[in-house]
Image (cartoon, rainbow, N blue to C red; front, side):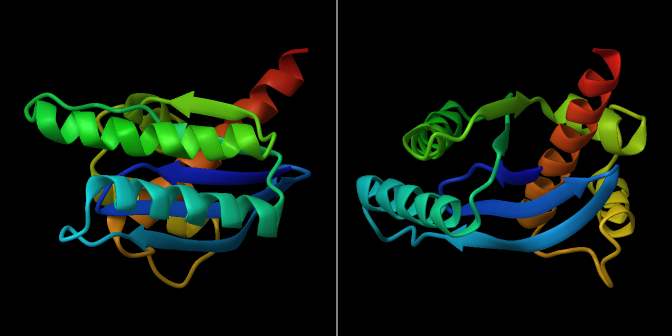
Amino acid sequence: MRILGVDPGIGRCGWGIIDFESSKLKVVNYGCIETSPKSQVSDRLLEIHEEISSLIKKHSPDALSIEELFFNTNAKTAFVVGQARGVIILAASQGKVPVAIYTPLQVKISLTGYGRAEKDQVGKMVKTLLVLKEIPKPDDTTDALAVAIAHAFSTRLNTKLL
């Protein structure tokens, strides 16, 4: 199974593609879509949509996993990130790719066993599980790989329960 994980954002949108076969994880590619704060929001959203659509066409993922939004302070930021999340889900829908949504708590528990794990703990687990030389940067990329891994683990668990 090939999974495209996405950490949605308007300025930086992390993405990571992993393969999950026979309980083994393998990184395919990862990166970060960065949009200019000087551009109109509509142009930034279009750029994110086009990049995610391109990744879907190039890598043909079996699923797109995306992090649920969690904001407790800035409603304006939450609104615009929600818009970015919407165009990402739209790109998946247009590409006929099923979408799975995970909360940050679910991702942290899946990778570390602890829902209040710090970013560096999650990063170290991503590095270890994907056998990487270093923790991917920026954090948005690490988070995208983490949500992809969480989906792989969730899929494995659901398959074993059937």
